[in-house]
Amino acid sequence: MTQTLTPSLTLEEFLARPETKPALEYINGTLVEKNMPQGEHSLLQGELCEVINRVARSPKIARAFPELRCTFGGRSIVPDIAVFRWERIPRTDSGKIANRFEIPPDWAIEILSPNQSHSQTLDKLLHCSQGGTSLGWLINPAEESIWVIRENQRIEVFTTDAQLPVLEGIDRQLTTSEILSWLIL
Image 1 (cartoon, rainbow, N blue to C red):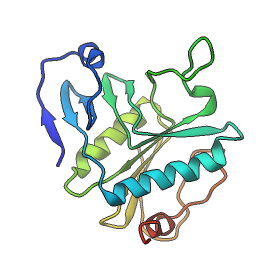
Image 2 (image 1 turned 180 degrees about the vertical axis):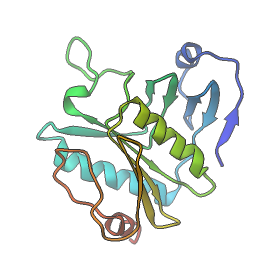
Image 3 (image 1 turned 60 degrees about the vertical axis):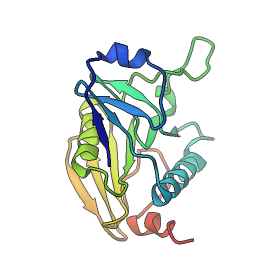
Image 4 (image 1 turned 30 degrees about the vertical axis):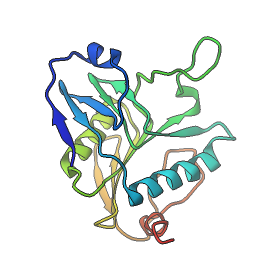
C-alpha cells in the first residue's frame, strides 16, 4: 500500500534531500512513498523499457527510463517508465545526460501493483498530461487492462487485442494481450 507522509517541506527542500529506497514523491505538498515493485510489476517494467528502447534508441527517436525522477508543475514524481523524445532529453553543456529532469516525460507509464491506489496513480498520469505529456498508460495486470490518457486528457480503456497508441515515431505495435502475455514464463 502507498504510504503518505506529511512533512513540512517545500519542493526545493525535498529535492535537496538524498534519494531513498523506495523512492519518495512530492505531490501537493506531501511525501508519498512509492510501492516496491513485485514480480509482475518488475517484469512488465523491464520488458517495456527493453521493447521501447530496442526500436527507439538507435534511430535516436526516444529513450525509456525506469524509475526516473521528473520534477515539474510543483511536483516531483517517479513514473515506473518515463519516455523522452531524443531531442528533449536534458543534457549538460558537455553533452552528457543531465541528472535532473525538470520537464514532464513525453510518455509516462505506470504499472499498478497490488494494494496500490488506482486513483492516486491516475492522478499522477493526469498531472503529467496537464504538464505536456503526450501519452500516459496505466497498466492494471489484475484487471487485464491498460488505461490510456491522451494529450487532451481523454481516457480510453484497452482490454484485448486492439492496438495501443504509442509515442509518435516509435515503430512498434503493442496490444494489452501481448503485454500481459509477458507475465507467463
